[in-house]
Amino acid sequence: MTASLLSPLPVRAGIGLKPRHYADVLAAAEQGRAPAWAEVHPQNYFGAGGPPHRWLTAIAEHLPISFHSVGLSLGSASGADEAEIDALAALCRRYAPAMVSDHLSWSNGPDDKFPDLLPIPYSHAALDHFTAEVGRVQDRLRQRILIENPSRYLAYTGDDWSEVDFLHELCRRSGCGLLLDINNVEVSAFNLGLDPVAWLDAFDPRIVGEIHVAGHAVKEDGVGGTIAIDDHGSPVRASCWDLLTRFLGRAGPKPVLIEWDTDVPDYATLIAEAAKADALLREPAHA
Image 1 (tube, helix red, strand yellow):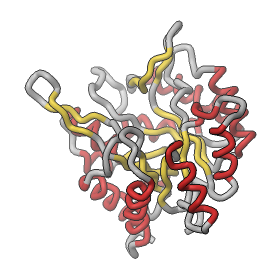
Image 2 (spheres, rainbow, N blue to C red; image 1 turned 180 degrees about the vertical axis):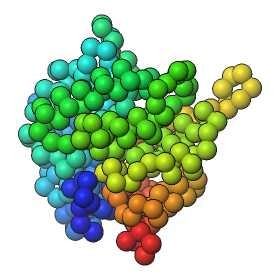
Image 3 (cartoon, rainbow, N blue to C red; image 1 turned 90 degrees about the vertical axis):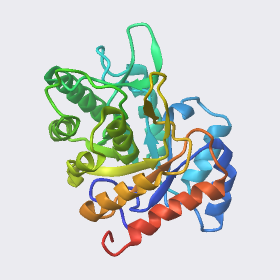
């Protein structure tokens, strides 16, 4: 399949590229059996050289690469981290990624960087701020980016926008696209007591440039209830596959990434998950 209108990525399943799979991916590529595309966290490649760059350079000769940033902190009150933008821009010049994305979140304070993607309020002020920051990054990178919907554990009171409407308006104002993480929809809906189907159905597929699916954990919350944890540490849940099928039936084919970031499996297991997504993308209703 060719690239979608919103993304130059192949309309196939991609994988999150992990160091333990470097050799497997390169060997498969050299035999003509590479994954359709791969996604990396660019912050892992901000060093000037070394083995990570040797592997990524070799792999990028065979398949498209997407940069899924986790460090811009677009929602921070002080704005996106300038050093992160500079490093990301330099890495984009080096590898010319097919797509760049980041998150609807913040992670930097005045003096600290937090190891998490923290939620923003869905207020008019936050929307103005986030729109300006996305525009600044896109101008610096000289390309459109995608912004991912978050996984949430709590909700702010007094929001001016629903999450879906906030993202729609952000895309309209800034010109960015949406990275629709269906696992995050499921996690957020579970934790906030909402309907994941209705939530997913509210998204406009025309702004979606990429889809993520992943596994998550459900654990006791310590006060007699349960909480969904977005840990990316297991196979994609059957319910997430069902939601993906539903969305593709309405949207048509989109690039789909298998995220697996903790308890990373062997290469064969990861590729088997990608094959499931590819099978869905080939179904007549979605092709």
